[in-house]
Amino acid sequence: MATTGLPSDTDADIARVSEALAMITPRWHVRILLALGRPLRYSEVADKVAWLQNGQLHPRLQSLCEAGLVQRTEHTPRHVTYGHTDRGAALLPVLPLIVTWAEEHLEKADRPLPAIEQIEDSLTLLTRRHAAAILWVLKSRGQTGGRTLAKMVMPDSDWTNVYPPLRQLVADGLVDTAGIGKPYRLSDAGDALGPVFGALSAWSAGQPLTQAARHPLWGRPDTAPAPKTWVSNQSRLPAPTATPAPSTNVQISSLTWQHRDLFSHATPARSGAALAAGGPRR
Picture 1 (tube, rainbow, N blue to C red):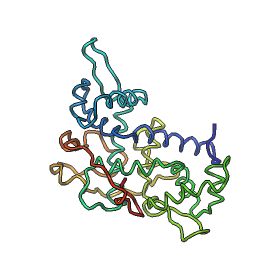
Picture 2: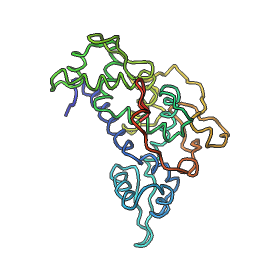
Picture 3: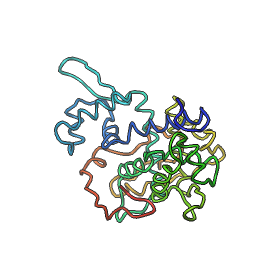
Picture 4: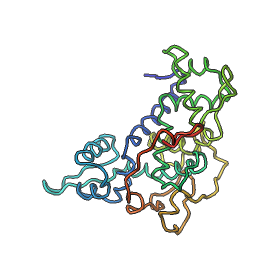
């Protein structure tokens, strides 16, 4: 069933990408996926995400299993392991693309951030309600007024309901406008999400990530982005032997994140004062 007023294939594409984001955005999901470098017993997973309190890990593992990203294998009644499914492993190369985008376009923090925090910050922005549909419309139409956006994004709702998510996207730095009553358009940061959305679209459709550059809306087949180092984790990681390139065919073996680098501390609490306009961190 269509959820927007967009063509059925576009509507289905947005729905798949939104579902993919919803799988990995819940708190700690990405950290657990990255902890599973190989099949691990429950106690071994718990050791790698030691900041989770008793009872918090099991429901998250169960949720990842239900999403088809993690597989629970019972070797014997006393020997159970958790590891990536093929679909879960195929999703991992999307994460460096998110880091590359975050390094370039998220508000700069007062300290270098680990890659995992860059990913979590970015997912917070991309999973806002109606965010994907609004960004899709603005990418396809360019400057668009609020009424037109509402008709295309939420055709069964009062048209004024489009303004809260629009204001949030403006505050997040993904959408620009000249002021009240003026059209909306993608910001540079919003437009630069092409590799991320293209890769998520390819993954969610069961295609190889090399198809991301051919996405009908977000793809840029003639553009080969230059390699970029990940500033966020330079203070935690040794120099990689090969710099990960922000391309859609990143291999899992190129990931340089290590357990000790990602999980050496619990994520500190953020205060409301840390949320500045134009691209909040969390």
